[in-house]
Amino acid sequence: MQVIQVADYEEMSTKTAAFFYCSTKGRPNLHLGLATGSTPIGFYEKLVERLQANLVDVSHLRTFNLDEYIGLHHDHPQSYHTFMRNLFYQPLGLSKHQTFIPDGTAEDIEQECERYEQQIQELGGLHIQLLGVGKNGHIGFNEPGTPFDSRTHCVELKSSTREANARFFESMEDVPTHAITMGIGTILEAEKIVLLASGEEKAEAIYQLVHGTYSEKWPITALQKHKDVTVYLDEDAGKLL
Ligand code: F6R
Image (cartoon, rainbow, N blue to C red; front, side, top):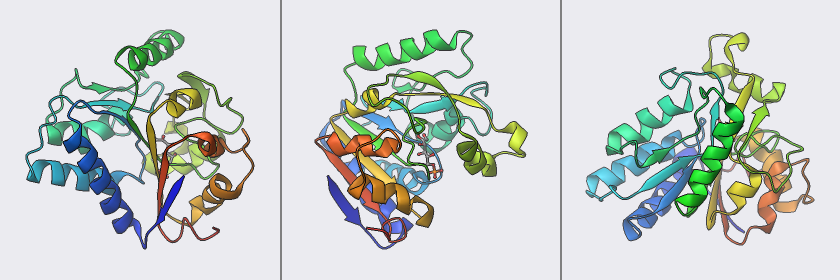
């Protein structure tokens, strides 16, 4: 595991965007696993800026998102469909045939989980997976206690995760209770994993990743056994290392 500690959010976003820019440019058929949340926003802005400025052909790129809330319409302002459309798909002109994300409005959620997992496998899997991390160490929406060999599945969000995400909604009641997420086993099959962490509230999870015991109590520790993980941290997220 390579841990790259930088000064602040800005530098974390710039360095990560530079890495993804070079990867996309060098491998036109790249399959990116992507994350949402507040951490990668600066990264998406910078990556889009560089790809556009250098007229990189992204017509063969494919993207696969980690997760989506259950019950939010694709056009809901806080759905991950909307997040991705605004920050990445639309600015780059990516089509529906290139961008994949679980459907949290599906009638049969179990079937949707299976369909999404199969789609990832059938299209050839993930080359680079971008991850953020929750305060409790969750990756995707894989909360503490999730088996490390899990595949795409439906989860009930922990109240701590709903509270953390309430800042994006009008009230706590509006925060969805369930989500679809790629499993930890799905994530671990990516050829390369890049994890971003910014801010003091992520410091404990990062400490567990680097020095903690490999345990389902901290989902992030599943990454300890992956052969190619790079972590970009700002100073606050790295303060317990
Ligand atoms: C989102 C995701 C989550 C977030 C995590 C951190 O697609 O997979 O694991 O990365 O909840 O969220 P932020 O970045 O908002 O602190």
